[in-house]
Image (cartoon, rainbow, N blue to C red; front, side, top):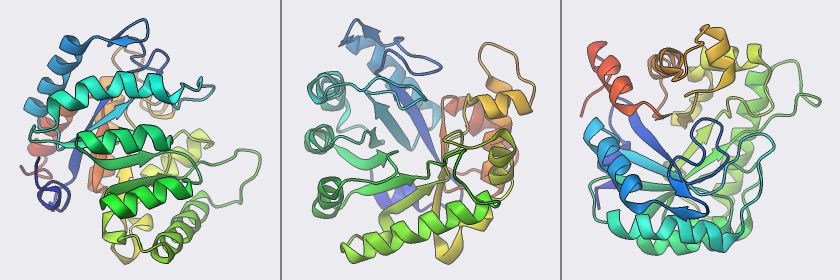
Length: 270
């Protein structure tokens, strides 16, 4: 297993690749499944490509969290994840699991998972206890509500992050292992998404660590007028802006292309 401190404390952003073991993810749902069963060989080839492309972290999800997603039972998520994690637990990459489900996270922690990417607004006490006991990294995502918000999305998100930091401290969680995601596309208007992308440094108070995920999201494909099937240009442009703004982890479907662009601009190092 790679050194977590090596992977996540570089001066340049760490790159988080995406593996969706889902049927309904918005951009690649079903690509790695046959029914509910994972195509193990195809998934391992994709993992190998992400590692070769320069991914520091690979984020595995067995349940989509896009708007209108269908909840997936714990055991199905486990059955999708574990055959893959078991095969790669000794690879030189940090394993992240995108889940809100304690049973899923607990099982994944036995197979090399070191990073919990919990996109729920309120992470459960059991999940927090697991994070503390296993000394895991954790990312917390802001989920807005278009019908209930103040006039300043930056302040809303910052206040949410501050409240979570206080909670984690009260639970004895090492905040050095905590990352915070502004939640692009989660209950935000297009203009709010663009405003947040342009103000990443606003959220980095007291050395707070920020994870951003703009890859293939509609707000940015519309903004950059990317009508291509791959959405590559919008993913790259938004990722570059987040990197320039100080994002500590960039979650992307396009690791190889993004790494090349960041290296070309002099804002990425191995």
